[in-house]
Length: 165
Image 1 (tube, one colour):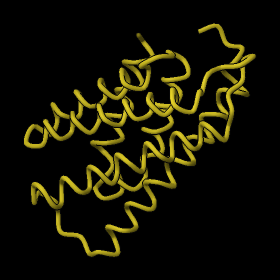
Image 2 (image 1 turned 180 degrees about the vertical axis):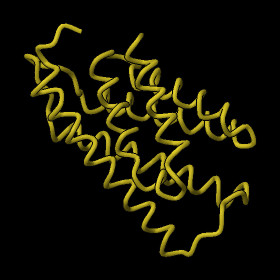
Image 3 (image 1 turned 90 degrees about the vertical axis):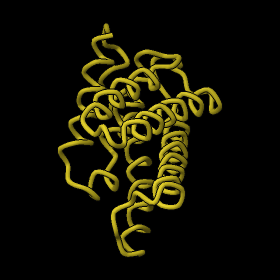
């Protein structure tokens, strides 16, 4: 559970102290920690990590706390769901890089699009951004998820697969 607390705290720091809209474009740290959390903890690992990060972030941004918690939890559940769907598990100490990249890309894209839609069209709480910036946020968020999937595979296959955690 120490991994969950540390990973959740790092997610909180990256969400709160990186200025907006950069914290929405570059979710690579968050996605990487969710993927590694899922690999280390197994079932529901990403959800636990996302929940801790979401609770900490929600306490910081009280006005948006329900949305923050909802989308953090959704992100963790999507990562865990795609890990299950794509059968991403540790086989002989290794994980399949392509499956991990696909899982992280899809989960990041889905949570990005859904949170973007809710915040801009259903709540009218979005900050004013030009359309081009909004498109760049969605594209960069998805690319960050892909890179995080690759990095998580690299970290696991090279460094963590033989570690006694």
